[in-house]
Amino acid sequence: MSRLETKRLTLIPVDRTLGRALIKNRSHAERLTSGLLHRDFPDEDLLAKLPAFVQRLEDSANPALGSTAPPDPRGWGLWLFFYKLERLTVGAASFNGPPLDGEVELGYQVVPAHRRRGLTYEGCKALIEWAFFDSRTLQIVADCESNNIASVNTLEKLGFTVIGNNAEQLKWGLTRSNWHF
Image (cartoon, rainbow, N blue to C red; front, top):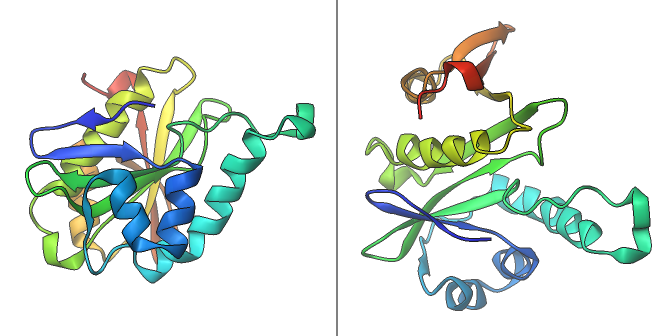
C-alpha cells in the first residue's frame, strides 16, 4: 500500500508489523516509518484499539480461515499523519474496514500540541479522496461529541452534514455525490 501526500503531510497506512511495533516497541515503529513518534502518540485510546486492529490484519492474511476471513483491509484501517519535513507523527485517522453496504466510518485524532493547524482537515481530505476512488464507497460517516467545536468545524469544512444525533453525539455523513474531488 502506498503512502498519500498532502501539502504538509505524508500519510502512511499501518500494516501488521507497524501495528505490533506501535503497541510494543516505539523505537522499532520509528525505524519502520523512518520517522519519529510524537511523545504523546499514540494516546491511550488508540493504544487500546491497536490490538484489535492488528488482529483484523492478521486474520485477513490467514489462509487457514478461508472464506471466514475478513476482507483484506489494506488501506481501510489506520493511517499515520507525519509532517513531511520533520518526519514527526502528529496524528492518525482510520476507517473501520472496507465499505459495508457502501458505507465506511472515519475516525481521527491529532496530538494536542499540533491541533488548530488544519492537520485533521488536510489528512482526512486526502483519505476521503482515496476512499471515494473506490467505487464501493458511497458514503463516509463520522461521529463526534456535539460540544467538540473543533471537530464539528472540521467535518463541516470537509462537507459532512449531520445525519443523526443523540444528547451528546452527532453522526455525520458525506456522500460520494456531495464530495468535490
